[in-house]
Amino acid sequence: MSKKEIYNTCSENHFSLFFKNHEKALRNFLYYKFGNEEQAYDTAQEAFIKLWQNCSSVPWEKAKSYLYTVAFNKSLKVVAHQKVVLNYVQESQPVTATNESPEFVLEEEQFRQKLLKAIDDLNETQKVAFLMHRIDKIPQKEIAATLGISVKAVEKRLHLAMLALKKNIENFR
Image (cartoon, rainbow, N blue to C red):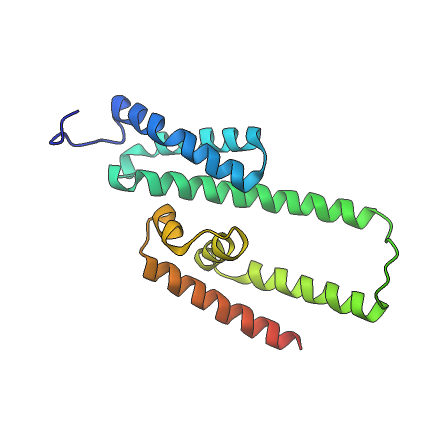
């Protein structure tokens, strides 16, 4: 394709080229998120399908950002579901003995629950940036590229997330 040719997300040729250029990287990104090759493959396929279904409303320049956003949001839903399943399994298992005092164990569990709730209460943009940066250790520049925003926007989201978490945790005491 010549440099002067305008790329169109709805063109089968352009979409096929886009798929070939980004499918492996997206699948690897999702494999890192899930730790499950099959789940990463399925989610990548679903993200490309959603991009194709919405191709008329997604400009070529935003296609990669859209693709990663769809895939990331899907991964968050899967993780939330896995968390529900894990909580159910943990609640159904008997409590194991520990060397810590009951008060310490109780406080630790209360703090963990408060922290998880505080993270869950962040708005979606702050939560995504926070989890990618603090949990997944992704650099701010890479987060900005993945989400299709500026590094300054990532910094602001992280700052606001930290302020909200600090406020919620201070209220815990």
